[in-house]
Length: 573
Ligand SMILES: Nc1ncnc2c1ncn2[C@@H]1O[C@H](COP(=O)(O)OP(=O)(O)OP(=O)(O)O)[C@@H](O)[C@H]1O
Ligand SMILES: [Mg+2]
Image (cartoon, rainbow, N blue to C red; front, side):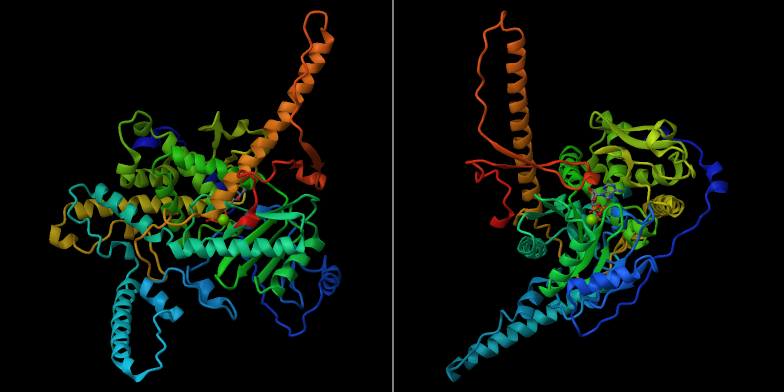
């Protein structure tokens, strides 16, 4: 099968060396007190406690994680999903049940939109009809929900492909149905857009020099219904990642009823705040003063445009790992970013795709099976790293990657960050043993299922699922509408605008530099050349350097034409 010949090597050696330890997820009970202390109180308490314990709960109900170890740092804390897509809805204290993933009828009922207030008795007939209509609609909805909730693979309802001659084609259709099933509805996109706007507004209220940007799966359209929203706050003055600021923000968002279940990870290399936005039930991660995620979002969207089948396979693999609790980097799982890189490499190095022998979109079934085969059975985890060269994915020997030397445990996944070649984005995935096993098991299950169904009669095939053998979806009933074309994902628009603005700044910067260089060169050789004064665009530049550890320089430009249509201005949301 396709890609196996590319990177086959033994990982037997590693079986002895891998210690198989799995870190336990810390669980801290939440304590709620009625008194609402000020930030200073919270800080005092934290200062007293610091050094004594690795986590504690403030009087304000904010969970503080004092992680200092490398493994727990920064992005590796990202989970990405609720354990169950409905979990957040039920655990969010005092929140309204969000109308995510509910069929249209229920939404209307829940909103009371169908209720008609009648004051005159002459309208009794109308009322009766309305009630009848409501009852009928409620019955239909109940029936639909029952049907759906009784199955682990709801994407096959009313979507029968059992008559396909090739079982791999059947699987391809199921993959497409699954993706349509979990793709967002108009309401879900609107809820996400609104949630981001509200949090941004609150951030700007607290810090007028700051802005909030979205990166991660919402900004790449690679999110499952329960995926978190990754945000980053950048500021002109910088330094928003300080401990003091983290608590100010946590407290501010809590006061504005925009955050519950708050966790502050203050001492990590990449400090973050995690919380649940109570109106939507969406999990939010906020990091500070780092723009690499914004760069990655743009790159991933480019990959998606250039790589047919990438979105489908990424969503399937995400759901596959999510159902097995293997997607959480905090517990050694494989995060969303690593999954994208694995699938991207797989598709771009697949011999039959490279030679245009097959179209990825028409062969998603075979490709999924081969993905599981490659990373479950054949990939040489001990020796091979994934990276990129000139924008194309490559495999290269781990031993030549200086930034990850010395390698203590060879049986680990090594994926070079496309935006920073010294960063191994899968360094937190210490449970690669179980992930590999799960992939290998999925290959066996799927191939066996294909053989089994191939020899079954059409009657026996009816109501069966191929994909359901490896993926389950439990949660609220959804419809099959992918409504991404109906409403703008503002995270994508804003990210595009952010990059337009940035490239304009960089262009202006280079232009000024070029002008200066040209002038200097001309001056040096003024005997030979006529000196031409190049017009320099009038731009007032102000360089604001945040704390040196970020290693990045933020440039704000204020010029007369600042407010043009490219201007990144989230306030216009
Ligand atoms: N180890 C890492 N090093 C650097 N950046 C990372 C790392 N992990 C994540 N990121 C950044 O954070 C973003 C979000 O990562 P994450 O793993 O949450 O993926 P995701 O696409 O948002 O998936 P999910 O929907 O599961 O949350 C990535 O696109 C990347 O920019
Ligand atoms: Mg994410």
